Image (cartoon, rainbow, N blue to C red; front, side, top):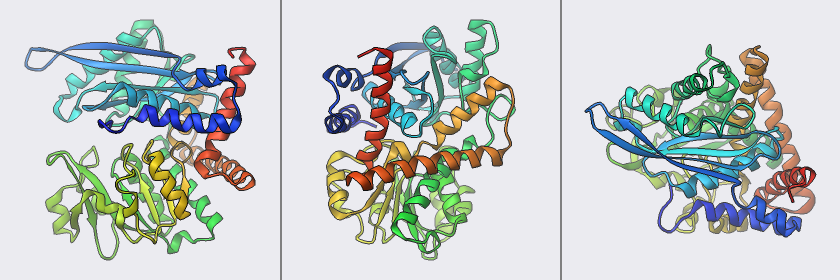
Length: 428
């Protein structure tokens, strides 16, 4: 989340400005695309279990819908800020564009901590959020999804509230729903698996074997767990995993001499990806400070937690062995850190390409809901692999041809597609 010295919205805008200059965009197009088209700020009053009324603050930011309905998750986080949501809405636009799916970008958030809320209280927050934006979202305008600390149950409560308000059945309104209630098979794995599909292609370009590679991962939530699962299935070795400890309000790195076992740690982690310290120690894991994940002698770093994790203050702690950074999180690397990473020649798989598996599978879910016909899991994951592989190939080809940093190449493709849509619609 945002700190006093780090503003993700400013980072997102500076990334955009750099590429807008490369593309020589018209001033009008530039001004339109560097900020959201619409924002909704609202309060959600909830009667808590103790009978008292508590008011939560919510947001929905729609950045751009020139290429299709806006798309983006809804976060529950006690440190959520509107600037974080704004930044994420921009990144969602570029993410949908770079993998070439017909959607725009949006993001939502509620300032709350589900660790301290009962299921009934969480349900009331979900329904309250929908009541505030029911006229401004929908299957042909803005399609939400789960994000940090939200899940399929939250989406189903939101869908039910939306359908109650509008008096019909609209399963394509929201994605990330439980399977059997309009959800897609493969959606749970999609973001994490997508990270590894992109990583696999990057290793091919570098002439490295995934079976002989090692990785250090930050995060142990849904994205990190499934990325770790597929990476080890493909033969890679995980040397360390870092995650947030909610009780201590601190992060720790867990390391084991013969490698980290994903299945082992899953059994001792909570639903938010927090690892039980005592049980980890009993299984032979070292418990180290959180940032130590960055210093591991590994070939690959996979930041899969939050934004602003590799920055000017810690980028020099990256081991000299690191050859690839595959960004599973949104905005994990600051522009200052990017300069040092670029100087060292580390191959970067940029966030909005690397973690686009989730929104791609959400798009598949939306398509399936609209058809009322659902695919088998293998078909979903095969289509996902093809989409991610194709997107990587296009970005890598442009980066090679124009001698661009991978992040810049991904932005050039994504922003040029949105700019063209804006021009064709006559908006600028």
